[in-house]
Length: 230
Image (cartoon, rainbow, N blue to C red):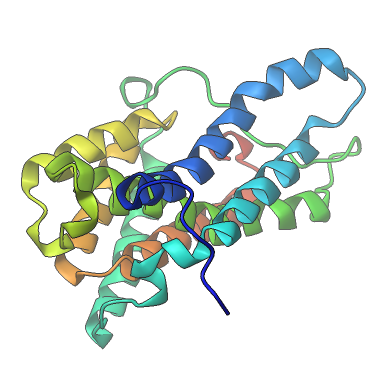
């Protein structure tokens, strides 16, 4: 199959492929209040399905540009174990760091309950799928593959993960933390995923760790009804 011609220069195209899915995700968060005013009777919880669908479509469109995923660096067996341990540790930290000083603003939350208080399992399934299967790929491509390497050098596609310095990892983690309501937990997660990326030399271990964190968080939220963590 012939490769589609690049729309822009290679470095700019690489940036676009990693930034646009993340930008779409953020844009939907910004659009939510506008949709609420324009369609007051609509169940806005289903907007998440549209949001995830748009991000997944963008990731699919740019799939050929993600060379770090299509031609991944070899990952050793113990790196997968390290990814699992990292994902579990970040999950444990996340649910214990909802402290006033570690919280930024009000939690948006996502409550999939019906009027009678029982969970709407279709909403639960969409939320868990988005959080555990789509968001980790989108965020790791943006935060680790793009932001960390771009902080280190503007020609980021030439930067090997192992060469990323501490300054980039710390700054990237701080920015990642500010994306989240639980900012301190987000900083720790950014440090953990960034360190994993640098150590393993592949984007797949941080994706796996991030996916495990989000999957465990989703299951815990459903079991405990702590919807504010979503």
